[in-house]
Image (tube, rainbow, N blue to C red):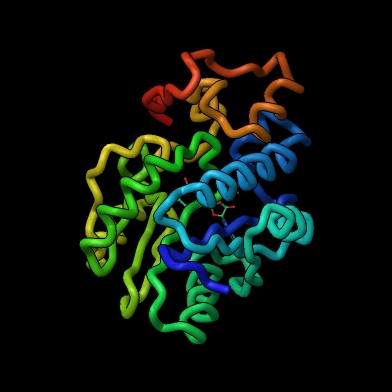
Amino acid sequence: MIRPGWTVLVPVKALHRAKTRLRPSTGRDTAALALAFALDTVEAAGRARGVGTVHVVTSDPLVAAEAVGMGAAVLPDLGGGDLNLAVSRAAELLTGSDAGLGLAVLPADLPGLAPVDLDLALAAAAAHGRAFLPDAQGAGTTLLTARAGHRLRPRYGPGSAAAHQAEGAHPLGVPAPTVRADVDRWADLRALSHGSCGQRTREWLDGHPARRVGRGPPGRVAAPRAR
Ligand SMILES: Nc1nc2c(ncn2[C@@H]2O[C@H](COP(=O)(O)OP(=O)(O)OP(=O)(O)O)[C@@H](O)[C@H]2O)c(=O)[nH]1
Ligand SMILES: C=C(OP(=O)(O)O)C(=O)O
């Protein structure tokens, strides 16, 4: 059942292939950390008032099982390793049965995501047929939205902010730092305060004390350092 509000797609790469840029810092635990990031992202998205339904797009059975356990829906990854194709095919599956859906794509690496920030970004996105939120550095993209009747046309990858703007998506300038703070490298994780991370990410960090990240006051998301 699709609840009123934005239908959120969270693409999650197969864990054994995920977060390769973190491997130098985490070694074999990268899969467990990627799972923690993903589930914390899904949990926070589900708590945003403007979100109706969260769909995890994945081929990974463990991710799928955990997502269902959290009350999220799961869509198959039909992208064959291509993120943009995975997102587009998942969107087609949803809009094929309900053309009235507003869709929002969130990467699964936002462990500090605050529902209030996501609500702020989604409220701004509602004013545009298609919109996107650049990542903290400004060159990439985290949130990508398409109102009902508009196609997402995802262009994730290097330089995706410019690519999405070139495709006619409106760049959102709202102050929603936790929606922009995707974690690709260890420096990104260190820029988050321990208290602002989701529970699963905190538990992973607590299990790896040698790698404890910055200890800003709970809830503060420091401006991510340059990557
Ligand atoms: N379902 C699905 N999700 C993907 C795919 N590629 C990337 N993602 C997700 O898209 C978001 C951004 O992915 P990347 O940052 O490019 O990949 P990553 O695994 O997070 O990190 P790296 O391996 O270091 O590039 C993350 O949430 C990934 O899980 C894909 O082919 N299929
Ligand atoms: C996928 C993207 O970036 P990253 O791989 O750094 O998460 C993006 O910004 O479009």
